[in-house]
Length: 329
Image 1 (cartoon, rainbow, N blue to C red):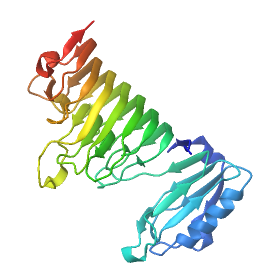
Image 2 (tube, rainbow, N blue to C red):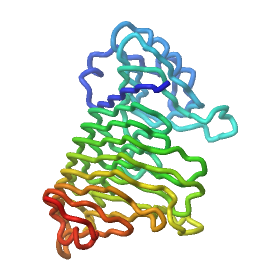
Image 3 (cartoon, rainbow, N blue to C red):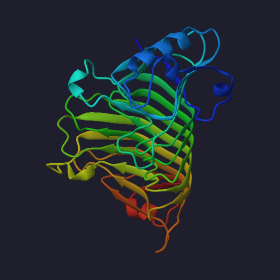
Image 4 (cartoon, helix red, strand yellow):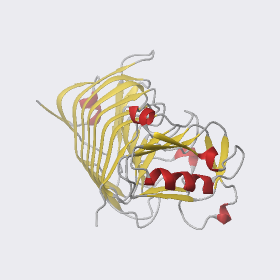
């Protein structure tokens, strides 16, 4: 059965000011100590509260074993991370695939952050889920603000502010065998500031299995000094991990980038590089106005294995000619 999940992450929330506070240090947590039981005890009482509650991890560095925070809860609840939470370094002690898991909760707020240079710290990762809504969210992190993995269906991202971070991404896809299709992705009314990427779709070359990513739409996006604002990258290979650069086996189709405006920190404001063996199909580029912030001339674009349809005004010089697409009024 499809699960409908509504996540609202407000880093500066009026809710937090009114909530009853459950400080984990009152339940035995100490800096430099293992706090999983204190976390669960504080969560249990907060979840049972008939009024809004906030579980607070104050400043300091703490260690936790795997822990699952389960609902339903009686009232809106927040987890507020003011310190640093680290996993137990003994991976053999983990009995499940998850470290910190939240499940079966409505009206949930997660507050906290990650340094802009912290690796592999996605703000929110969605995978093998459907009917997901991520709304009114402010994310500052060191990796993707939001990453949407394989098996994601009907994911709605709206009114999100992202930065620092790596932007809002579909993928990476195609790294593992038996990945499930992605479809129905809607990213609207978002603002990205000082991010290394904007809105992107990324897949690995030499995919071990074939899959699809379709019906993905990015609309009404503001870029403030964002790198690579509009990006399809089917040659995604960070840190030189790829043993082969054979074409990606992820088929991308039915995609639109509409009304994306602002400034780019990279001269290449739009890059659409698709698979040579499975070219992208039915991609629309509409009303794009991106100015390059740096020296050396105006913003430009790169395209490969794609013939997008251009509509409205696209203010990237020679974009239609570079991409070999068709222009439409």
